[in-house]
Image (cartoon, rainbow, N blue to C red; front, side, top):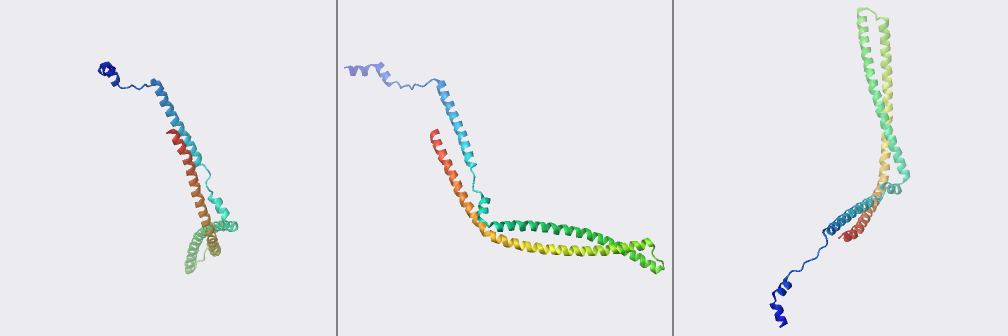
Length: 219
């Protein structure tokens, strides 16, 4: 009878069929939780950035140190000396060639003056008139300057030829040294590349070891 009465009672039926309500906290609690979550995410991002920057600043393998350890120091020293001498010899050749250009211009000018005076002397002799004393002195000076310039020009030619021969000898020696150092440089390059690959893998592993736990914590 009681069961039948409860089923028949409309108040009890409406109470049993009413949806249950979830109890929510005050609105400012939800705001605080959201703010704390955002602050935690921001701080986590800053921390990750600082950690990644520190990992990126880790000292990588030094190629110059590897090359210095691998190569023959005597050959390296001689190669550097020969390179300096080659550069110096090239500068000397260039300077002597510039002097030669200036001297050639001076020689051509003195030759032109001398030819003009010789033509004047020839015309004077044809007319039976002798050159004046200043003209004869100018002719002698032109001849002297022309011969002096020719001699100096020849000396510069010989000097340039000697420098170019020295330059060819130095460049041949430099090629020999580079051939001797090539094997050592290739070995140093292979060692550097292997160390760099291991270094990059190690840094990547450190980043993952830090990022994954933090990501798990944040989630």
